[in-house]
Image (cartoon, rainbow, N blue to C red; front, top):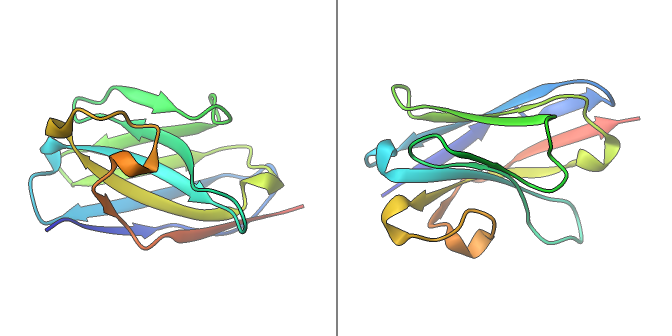
Length: 125
């Protein structure tokens, strides 16, 4: 069974940076595509970034070059580096894992098999 544990959330001023980390355990990390989503109060869960098992990266529409996803297959971790944060980035950020053999896309939440508990990111003005 896969377990995902996020860390690194907190309070940051607008324009600042934050790095989230997700620790993966349970089965072979190399068989999983990974993603980051976020959910603000009253809104749907939104795709932030994804990375396939072979490190092909995908970003959400708003992420452009300010959000960078990476994975360390030796440490079974995936990180999300967020730069120049805006107030509207305030949300709970979730790490998710998708069995790469499913063949699904990375952009929608229903394509993922496992989820972490989430970590709060608050950006102040």
